[in-house]
Length: 251
Image 1 (tube, rainbow, N blue to C red):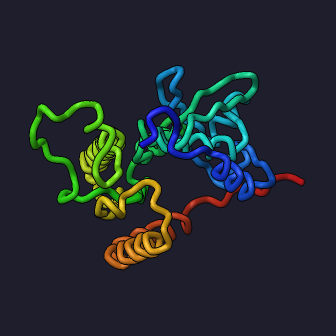
Image 2: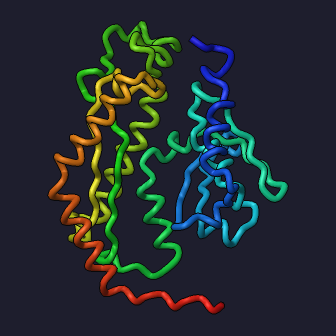
Image 3: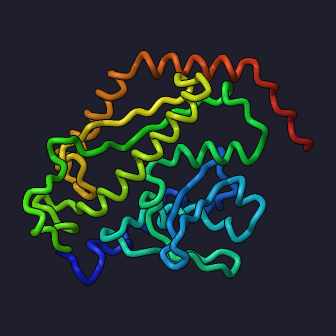
């Protein structure tokens, strides 16, 4: 148990991310529009980086690698990341503590940019798995719930962190479903999520057998939802066929 320091340093994480993004693109230079949530522990509020925002504000246009490091800094597992852009400092951790399901952020980004016809919005939300009911917590003896009970479980998970991230995830799911259902467009929003055991849901189990297991779960999830995903893809193709083509940029 790591009480006084993060479980891991972030050196290997930083090295891997920077190797993948060796050309050092900035947020404004992404091929498609992206939204990356983080949480600032000094300001105590979410900081949302996006391609559209970066094109308007230099302080929101850091290197993409820096934002990837920040949004990967899960509390307890990795240290917070200090990010500086245009002399502005951000003290960041994993955005999942505030927006583990970022689909609502994506919808808000679209709404802010243009007048929206919800019937033309198709939103596919892919979860990374949640712990199933049989492995979740039970009250048991209430008098035993001290600080250690909240931050440590026999399977080495962190109950408090799990609760914070899962509850935020579930609330977003409720909001998103309500938004589309209230407009008679429930098929325009699809949420796909896998059920995981406590072992499979572990944040940092990189054993080869566990990675193979997670890959199999992902493949099974695609097969299970094949018809839904196929219909969704057809809708996207149909929309693209009627969408006006962008004018070529002048040379």
